[in-house]
Amino acid sequence: MTDVVSSEAGWSWRWRRERAARDAEFASFVAAATPRLRRTAYLMCRDWHLAEDLTQLTLAKMYASWTRIWRTANLEAYSRRVLMNAVFDQRKLHSTGEVVLAELPDRPEQRAESTADLHVTLMSALASLSVRDQAIVVLRHWEDHSVDTVAEILGVSSSVVKMRSMRALGRLRKLLGEEFARS
Picture 1 (cartoon, helix red, strand yellow):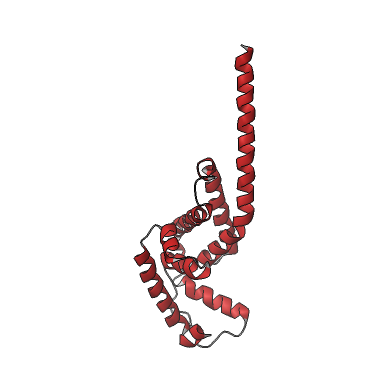
Picture 2 (tube, one colour; picture 1 turned 90 degrees about the vertical axis):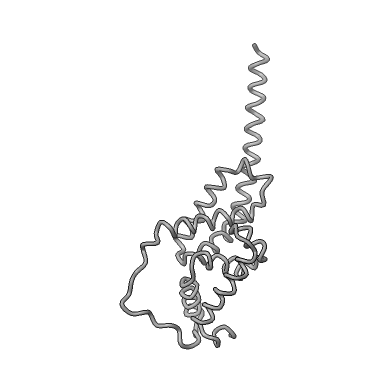
């Protein structure tokens, strides 16, 4: 009887030690990945509070499956995929929140002079793209991932990434003007 109790105590102690190691590894991952995830989320939704929520949702989902992925998965790619899925889901839920205007807003006619104006102009232009195109532009050109990596993150083919990227950049050039694109 004492052998059963001692083996259960040994198992419990080993389990706690393994869990502590996994939790420490997760905490280290969170510290390293949170700024990148938050920036990417912000570029996708243009709202720091929502970006923080999406980042937290991503980290919560990753923690729920951490025992399965912590030693086997490419955590950077996995976290981007979870974040993009959260962004897509959030957009589906709130797609009716668009504001309809009687007149189209003015398009930027001249080059933005200040950094804040430039930021607002770029974010507005990015917002005019579809969610998938935003994801492709952000992952490909902001985070500087290869076409194959973006395709893997979004679960599409490389040719889809190339085609949609080309079209999205064309739309951005059209919105912003050729002078803006060259500067």
